[in-house]
Length: 130
Image (tube, rainbow, N blue to C red; front, side, top):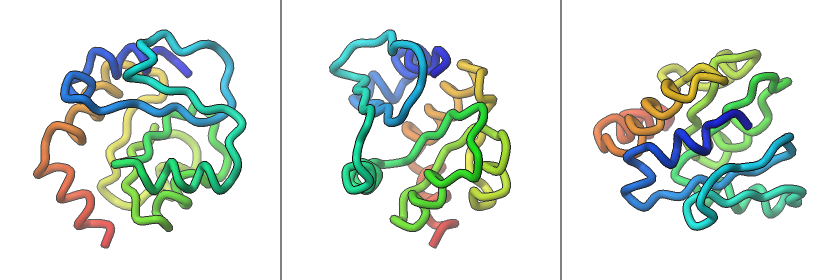
């Protein structure tokens, strides 16, 4: 996990009350306020599905995602994805999916803010997927 947790905390979405829920196996620690950023490691498939269903969007900032199962899982559950533009993620995610550099915190924060604070942008993405 690069410094995207810090980028989230600097975003308008954070100040609007959204929470970042980090799920997966990654090295390093999250450098954030526990009220705004929650970390889940070692979740079951059922727990992961529930976390995705409850989310406004799946945000995948992987630098080396293999096939991109999280994007496929989110799409199958009707949840929009915001992804880094690496590997198969660019091919798997629907056209118009917001992408950002996997290690570019500023770009991630701008993408995140566009999605979470611009209702027209969000509605367009949700419409494009149905």
